[in-house]
Image (cartoon, rainbow, N blue to C red; front, side):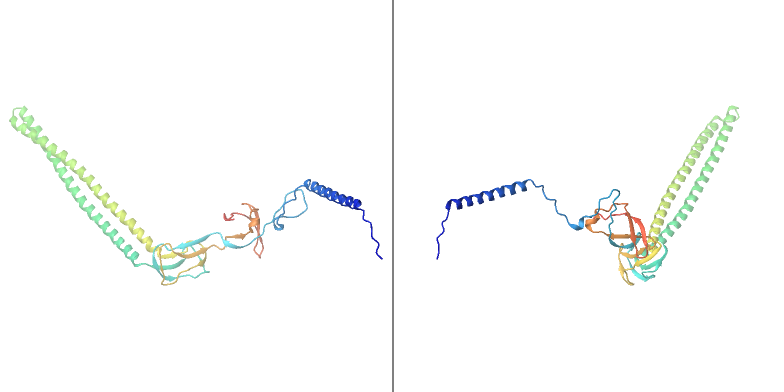
Length: 309
């Protein structure tokens, strides 16, 4: 049969109060302990750190990347003038020399202009020769006139001196001596004017010939320019190497400045490497490098870092 139990309410209250006080004390102790702990270290990505034993001395950092060998010097050959591709003399992959002809272009306007300037130059040179002969003849005529004037002046002075002597000796009239003196003065003036005319004509001849010569030089420079344009229709490699590209076809019309060919020097190569962005910050100009060409390892150094990196 059931026997009723006696419950001590006082003990139950004391036990509950003790449990509450213990919980409060545990919370206070936990809070105090956590407040005295130092902040935890920040987390980092595993791929951005190197884990190793600390050692004294230099630390070598190796940065690796894939890349390719490319020529150091690449010559892009543009079209010097507008023209139409007439012939392709070489194909990509063939070796070239500076004078190797790559393409032959045609431009009838340039060919006609070069021919016209050549004829204009020859005509100007012929005009110069004709003008020089004509002016030389004029100068000779003027010098002959000056010589005649000097001769007349000498004769007039001699006649005036003789008439003056006769007048002083009473053997001739005084008026004759005065007339002879007047004629001598006129002859002297004519001789001086003749000399001046010779000098003026000589200066004029030099000026006219200089102007004609300047015209010839201008036409010669224009003729040389047109001839250079005509010669440029024969496109040459301009350097020793290997023809990489020739992106034009026979019959194609090209404009001035259009790329006609690409010539590279395969004996002078450089390695272009692509480095991960997280490692690119460790690369410096002049840093030592080793390039594995799969046919041997070549020592080198960093010469350029792309600004985009």
